[in-house]
Structure formats: C-alpha cells, structure tokens
Length: 259
Ligand SMILES: CCCCC/C=C/C(=O)SCCNC(=O)CCNC(=O)[C@H](O)C(C)(C)COP(=O)(O)OP(=O)(O)OC[C@H]1O[C@@H](n2cnc3c(N)ncnc32)[C@H](O)[C@@H]1OP(=O)(O)O
Image 1 (tube, protein in one colour):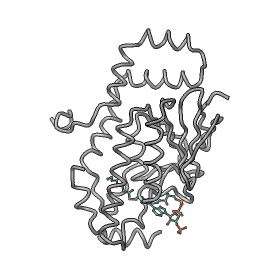
Image 2 (cartoon, helix red, strand yellow):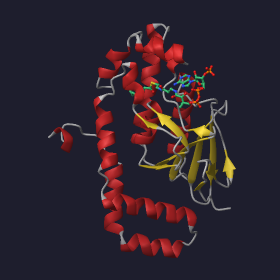
Image 3 (tube, rainbow, N blue to C red):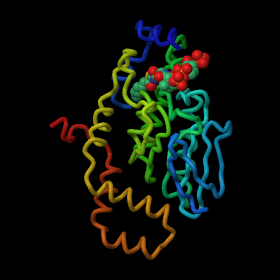
Image 4 (cartoon, rainbow, N blue to C red):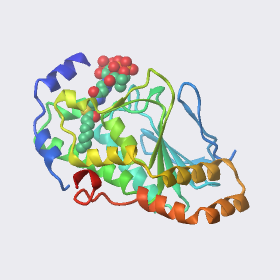
C-alpha cells in the first residue's frame, strides 16, 4: 500500500490531470448498528453478475439496498464501477423501485475510493475508459430520479466520499475509527470543480431537506399509508421544494459559491 501511494505521489499519474480538468464530460427496516453495519430484512433480491454489488430489493417499500462487496476495501475499480453503473441503470428502469440506499458489505469500510492500480502502469486507453466510468457513476447517482441515501458504514476516503456526496443524503456510523474526506489531494489528484458544488450542497441543506428525509425514513419504518398521506399533505410544499433541491442539476455558473 505504502509503495503504491509513494509511486502515485511521485507524480506517475499519466493522463489523469487532463481528464480531471475536462468539464464534459419484515418491512425493510434499516438500522445502522454500533459497528456501522447495516441490517435490513430483504424481501427479494438480484445482484450484479459477480456479486460485487449485492442488491436487496424490498418490494413492499420499493427501496433497493445496494451493498458494495469487493473485499478488502471496496476500491472502485473499472469492473466495480461498470457493475454499479449496470445496477443503477436497472433500478432506474424498474418501475417498482422508488429509492436506493448505498452501503457496504465489507466490515468497517464503505469504500477506499478509486482503485489505485487503475491509475498506474496502464495504457492510455485504460485511463480513458476508467475516468469515463468514474464520471458515469457520479452522473448516474447524482442525476438519479430515485431518492438515494448513502449509509456510510465504514471509512470512506476520496472516491468513497464522492459516492456519498453524489447521494441525496448521507448517514454515517458514529465510530471514531471511520474516516471520510478528500485525501486524494495528497496524491496530487485535483478534485474537479463540481466536487466543490457537491460539498457546498452538503453544508448548506435547506431545512426542508431534513423533512424530506424524515418522511422517507418514516415511510420505510412505519407501514401506515394513511399516516404517511397526512404527513405528505401537511408538508406538501416543503416536500416539493426539497425534492427539487436534491434533484436540481448542477449549474455551476449560477451557483452561489461562484457568484
Ligand atoms: C473525478 C472524480 C475525482 C475523484 C478523485 C478520487 C480519487 C481517489 O479516490 S484516489 C484513491 C484514494 N484512496 C486512498 O488513498 C485510500 C487509501 N486506503 C486507505 O486509507 C486504507 O486502505 C483504508 C482506510 C481504506 C483501509 O484501511 P485498512 O483497513 O487498514 O486496510 P489496508 O490499508 O491494510 O488496505 C487493505 C488492502 O487494500 C489495499 N487498498 C487500500 N486502498 C486501496 C485503493 N484505493 N486502491 C487499491 N487498493 C487499495 C491495500 O493496498 C491493502 O492491500 P494489500 O497490501 O495487498 O493487503
């Protein structure tokens, strides 16, 4: 690990800087226990071909639980990114699916971020394909029409943090050993401009966003349609605002931090 990091820090990140600068480019109860692992009672499931992304679809709520499952650290390799993209596409097209929760099947690790081995000693074609896959994931997650929540049940540096930032809402297990943040700057990787916006959005959520998530969690935990209808009616305006907020496209020119 140390040797890999040293090699990357020494500036052997061919093709990376250019790509990063380019601008195109029972009832499904969810708990985080003290160790941060997620417990959910699955109703039915389908997973990616290699089970690197386990999918547990709760038919009653229409919420899919996605568990990243590439030990030891769920590093985001090209195959994992590709499988995750396929799963996200399938869920987007599934008319019964209303939301998704992204978490990890690996104890203590949500994701170690981008796979370091995909960023070194590879031909240029590989870098193009890899970075296209990275961008595709954040676009699919951020632009998803489904409500999506990151249940961060372990450490989540760099690209792992990106996955969390792309989600509509984040819940992290309360464990002092779990770290999260953008440590990739130490490897010489400059985070692209939209990373700022994703972070800004996290630090300045409107109060109604919390209401939106409360309603969602309420829907998952309490199977009481009439109670839910009352909540929805009472707060319909706030819910509409929060839904449009979390699903708004990034428009960096009009964004407040760039004004
Ligand atoms: C366009 C969007 C821009 C987004 C920019 C994002 C960039 C990145 O994501 S760069 C990647 C940055 N990630 C890291 O620097 C993470 C480094 N890893 C860690 O900090 C730790 O490994 C850990 C906290 C995630 C887990 O710690 P621990 O449980 O102690 O496990 P080990 O450190 O012993 O690691 C086990 C095993 O996993 C290998 N490994 C760790 N991280 C990666 C990785 N990102 N890619 C590939 N492999 C990784 C590590 O080398 C160990 O392997 P072995 O030595 O063979 O056991």
